[in-house]
Length: 392
Ligand code: SIN
Ligand code: CO
Image 1 (cartoon, helix red, strand yellow):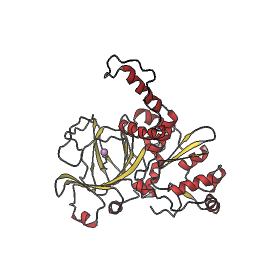
Image 2: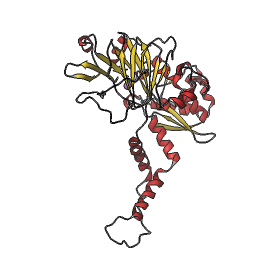
Image 3: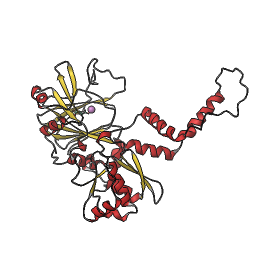
Image 4: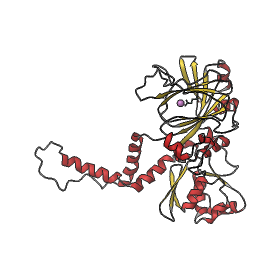
C-alpha cells in the first residue's frame, strides 16, 4: 500500500492525506492523467453484451424515448433493443461491472486510501456523441474515470435536497442547472473527476466511443443504521428484559406519562444500544453484505479443511469471489473478527488481513493457526473460490 504521504498520480499529485483533508466529501477534483495511458478493458459492444445478460443490472436512458422524454428501461436487453435505438440521444449504464470483469475489479485496488468497505461498485456507461443522463445530483462520492472516447463534464455547485427536479419523468434531472465558472472540462481516457455527494453535474458524451467508469461509494443513511442495528440488537436481547418501574411513586394523574417514565425507557434504550463492540460486530456485517445476495454461490457440500491444505500445498490458489466483500477488526493481539459477505469468523489478525488484502491466497496462508478451517468455511460460504474455477 502506498503511504499516506506519498504523492499519487491517481490524485493529481496529492498525497492521500491531502486528498482526504481537502477534497473527500468536500470539494470536486479534476485529475488529468490519473491512469496514464489507460486502456479500457471493455469496448461499447462488450458493455452492450453485459447488458443483455440475465442477472446483470443495467439501464437504458433515452432522451426521446418511445413513450416519453428521458425514458428509463431496465435490462436485460436484447439485440432488437439496440437495433431500434437512434444514432444519438441515449445512454446505457451497467452496474457492478467489477463483479463480472476481473480487470475492472482490479481498478479498485488503486483506491486503497479509502476503506474498501465504503466502496459500492464500478458502474460503466456508454453514450454516443451528445448522450447523457441529464444534469443531476448524487448522494454518494464518486470517481468518474474516462475509459475511452471523451466526455464533457460541467459542474453546477453544491445543491441541497430542495433543488427542483423536472416533474413527470423517470429520472431525477435538475430543472435548473447553471455551470459554475471554471467547472467545465472535456475528459480524455485516463482522466478522472472526483465528486463529493450533493454536487450538481452533467456529463455529455463528446465522441461515439465514450465509456465512463464510475467508481461509486456508499454510506448507509441514519435511518438505515438505526433500523438495521435495532433489528440486530433486538434479536440478542431476549424476551425477559422489559420496561420496569420498581421505583414507581403514586402518580399525580393516573393517565399522565411523566418525565420519570420517559427517563426509564430512555435508559433501557441507551443501555441496549450503547455497546461499542456490538455496534462494531453489526457494522462489519452490514458493510460487507453483498450488493446482490443471490450472487453468493454457497457450496452444496462442506469442504474438508484437510482438502484445502492439500490443494494449497499442491500449488492451487484461492481468490476472493468477484463481488465478495471483506473487512476485519482487531479484537486483541491474537484474535480478529473477519467479516465476509455479511457473516463473521474469528481468526488470527494477520490471517484476516491477508484474506482481505493479499494479492495471492496461496500455501503461505497455511502458516497461520486454523488457516485451513477458516479457508474451508469461506469456500463453503462462496466468499472464496479456487482460481480459474470461478464461473462468475
Ligand atoms: C454517466 O456515466 O453517464 C453518468 C454518471 C454520473 O453522472 O454519475
Ligand atoms: Co451522477
